[in-house]
Length: 102
Image (cartoon, rainbow, N blue to C red; front, side, top):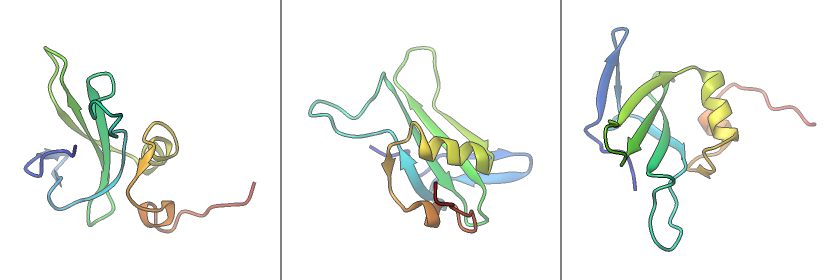
């Protein structure tokens, strides 16, 4: 399951487009029956200009699918937290962000 390629939203004069962005991580995985987690899935992307955004797809009645910009800190929190399915490495998802040994 992936977000639709035609999903586009303009926010603060910036165009966020699934078709031109890279999928970094998501919470969609096959559990033997379906891909949906609680009838909602979130996908994290970055644009060619390194702006981050999420797409949330929902099956709940009365809710709409959404595309929302997020900060790099919010993106890292999602990548390290609830979005367990990683499509790229941390270094590729967050170029220039330093990782320190614990």
